[in-house]
Image 1 (cartoon, rainbow, N blue to C red):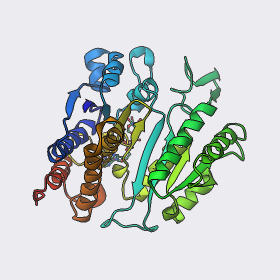
Image 2 (cartoon, rainbow, N blue to C red):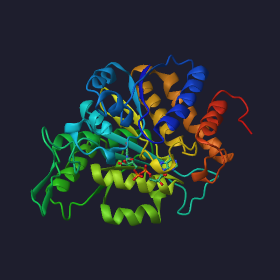
Image 3 (cartoon, rainbow, N blue to C red):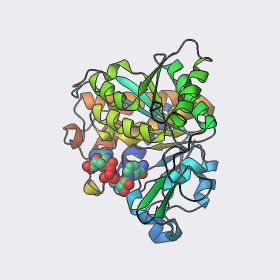
Image 4 (cartoon, helix red, strand yellow):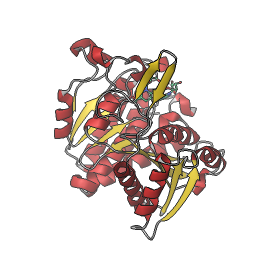
Length: 357
Ligand code: NAD
């Protein structure tokens, strides 16, 4: 499996190094042939190449079996004319990674104030309220007069149908329940179309239960009783917000694994940002990117890679759960390990050796 690895900004290089240590251990344990190709995006790329992401990286990504993308300082990148491009958008749009899969669950050893849960947010990734990806050319946001801004939200039947199908297929491998989250009472046309598409796809999956919940009510339901949800499908912006909440409910934003998947390509990417406030201190939690990489191995396994990759992805997820239960955690989870030690502890678990004390 050839992986294009792009560490990104802030804590990106630290959590990527820890993730590569874990992938290396998984490759040894499961006999995976991993070929890692490293390159740069973000500030490092802007310094070296005059742009945050070079166009040729899209070809490199197409030739790879998957990408590991660290967080980028996207808030700093405002002017595309100056080479300041959001790398995340660049690959999601360029590779048509339409499904953003964001699992969240409670872990033994961490407080579960609202009860145990295990759910996945399936978020549309290529249109919606995202100014940088819903237009063929130009931005989806415009300043009509100095005091009037318009932000455009694009919703298409094709994108709604494929994200709904991704959610139902995932529910078939899980507990057989899909919740469509929307605001069709206000956005009657756009979210009405999204909801219609979910109902249309549901007819192809008679064994899967579909319920619908308004997005504002969902915020209350998911805090009150997260255990009632299995697969939650929603449009881009709602999914972005909801999945940060579910990651935090699971214990920390640093536990939010995230896979961006299309029909031909997939990219592991932590759900959180570049966390400049803690960058370079060896305190960031690497588990989010590690769990994202585990999702990527599973995706590759179900496609070309076969059972060993599926088993390796599952073993990494189990190693994270075991490490958390054993107290091998970074400080955001109440532990004392540094980023590097947390990665080494997972690698040691995967290889069956004693974790460092
Ligand atoms: P953030 O997610 O980087 O940080 C929010 C808070 O969570 C901070 O207190 C941070 O220290 C903490 N945190 C985040 N990840 C953590 C981890 N792994 N371990 C421990 N603590 C962690 O959000 P922000 O500060 O609003 O954004 C910082 C930059 O990241 C901005 O430029 C933003 O645009 C960018 N961003 C990038 C992505 C991406 O590349 N996918 C996503 C979100 C934000």
